Image (cartoon, rainbow, N blue to C red; front, side, top):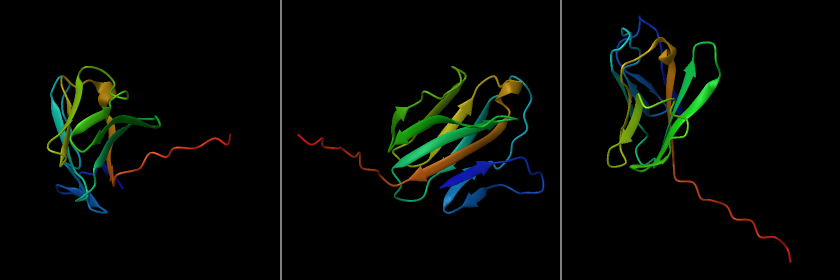
Length: 123
């Protein structure tokens, strides 16, 4: 389930689709300001993901949580970006001292637990 924060000044406050909620739905800030984005996943979904599509670029993975534990943050651009998930519920994505290259569309997605598959090789 993917949702997004977007730049539509005609919209009000919250973007909601398929049960995933993000706040705010758009944010305009000045350079060097901090910004915090929030994602409320679908109730019961243990996995939560953040993605970013920078202006003129493809969508990129940022970070993945399983419940409250950060599993993979290999996509976080630099030390100015941080993410956390409180008690396996909502998640926040924070950007400190924002720069122009941080502009883009930030997506949040959630899913139920997935089972890792193991494959047996014939002997």
